[in-house]
View (cartoon, rainbow, N blue to C red):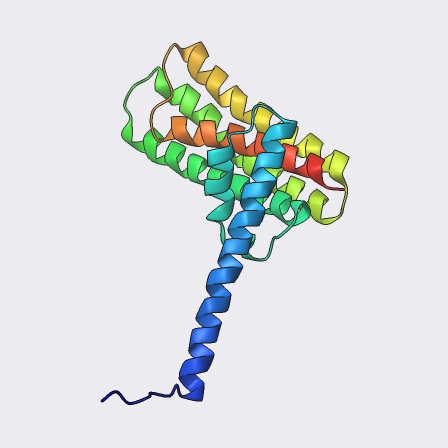
Length: 185
């Protein structure tokens, strides 16, 4: 014979909280996906998968359910990525004895410190609803990142990994943040 089991109030509260968390995560994922798709529709350079991956995986996306919040998250992702690139440059400068690579690495190290500041400035401008100023800062982050590519091209060497990946990501994040900023009404 089966007996009926009852749920304690504490267990019921835990189950409800878990359900709310799962449903909330799905709505955040949906907001990120919708915003990334809208950004891609407005700018063909936007990589939707990278947008969803980088923004959806950022801790700030939990509070950002609209274009304004996700534009700020995208700019913070840019700061994080630029900082990772600067750290990788520093590690490669210490480890790589290639004389032709050293000047390009030094240039990129300086540039990525600036890229992080441009992304941070864009975040501040978005927070202050100064969208044209934010776009200018994002454009500058993009331009500075491309100058790192140019430094390696001038030296006649290719970007080493993981710097090459960070460079691609920084370029894409600047484009994504700009496209999302353009979506803000």
